Length: 132
Image (cartoon, rainbow, N blue to C red; front, side, top):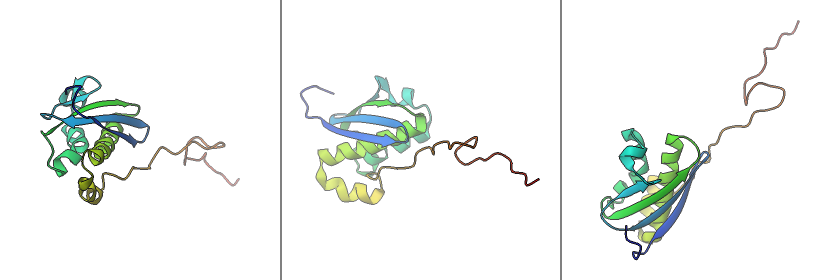
C-alpha cells in the first residue's frame, strides 16, 4: 500500500477486541499487525469471517488493507476486523451502505462477558443450596 494513496479508516469492535482498519485502492494485500492473513489467522473460518464484507461487495483483490488489532482471542479479533472493514468501506464508497446493512456487518455485536457477582462463584453459577 503506497503512502500517497487516499486511506479510509474504520474502527471495529467485538467483545474485548479493537481493530483499526486502513483501506486504500490496491492489489488486495491484507496485513494484520505486520503479518499476512494466513500467518495471523491459521483457521480458514476466521479468514473467511473477517473478509466477508470484501467478498460480499465484490471488492476482494481491488483494495489493500492494513490492520492493527489488539485484545481478545482470535474469533473476537476476526469479528472486530470484519466490523472495521465494513466501516472503512462505507467511507470508501457510501453507495455500499444498503448492501452492507442487509448483510448485517455494520451492526456492532454488543455481546460481552457478563461480570462476576458478589456472593457467588461466577456470573451465573451459585453455591449449592441446602434447606436443612
